[in-house]
Image (cartoon, rainbow, N blue to C red; front, side, top):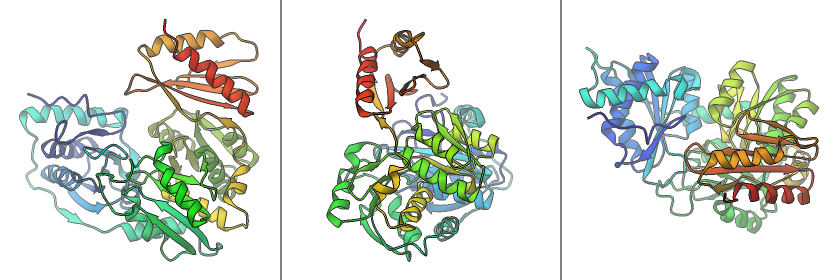
Length: 454
């Protein structure tokens, strides 16, 4: 019987519980299918620190080699290190990680040569179809199998990032880094080593069981340790990476979280100084301050849907120099349009170390509005609740509605976006206003509609 992959093949990647939902046998078929769909004669494969990652990535490599493809294994790496290898070697790539999901999960993030994303519309649906077919009848084999070789890329990755942002002349900074037992513990020592930085490491031991906290810095409970340590150390800032270290979250010298929108605006201003007149992509949930700062610095802001495939498509289409999301994903033209939290972190360190003020003072110019953060509500009928909210605001004076991604309602002094989760029975609300009182009132108003029972 063909494997049922409906539970593990998502919009942008493969993700599920090992070995209940998928195993090395399926990983081998994914390797073969990836080669067939991309037409590649050589690929690069990396993996995170999860207990199941070495076995799964090795099986994927065997499946690819069986179809005649040469495989370069780069071993332990962050997701952006895999993107670097794909870009630098100009090869399709596969990264074995489940990002911040619990230990029993694993997954595959795939890309074409030059780190171009593979999602449902760009090859993932065909890969799934082949794996389902071959799980029943067996995968084909080439007359001559490909080779499997190992290659070290961490040093080259660090050198490349440091060539994009010069930190050699900054004032000395003390930075606490919480790697969450994820891949930041692997990359940070090499990337930040030898710079004018006093790095205080937290949870750098690679441990895919995440013994200290979930490796998802967007959830406030997971940065509590970092906040306390920044205060205790009198540090200039704190950085937190997620499990596969492609996202970076920042806290200031007071231990207060810095919104990813403020980081997006700060990095956008720096990138526009290097590339005058450039285009900057931002998703529709980032703050009003992002397009404002982009325009103030002579750039063109482009608003897009939430999700890395949309951001990367828009970057390729517009030739954008940079893109940012509210979820702390940061995308750079200089990094093959791929997301790298580490490069964003280097920009923050360079900006802070290039002047004498504190981080809270520095980002105040980019953090101009009051926001709710993302608030999730579990609802039985997403469509009905969305319709109720739309009906409440449609036709109101001075209010505009758009449905680029969920429902965005905008007035002169505030906006909110309400989106349905693709994977859970949730509605996600983001609110922003010119002051705290308006933001709180609007938040409560919309939540009352969302959580009402008919």
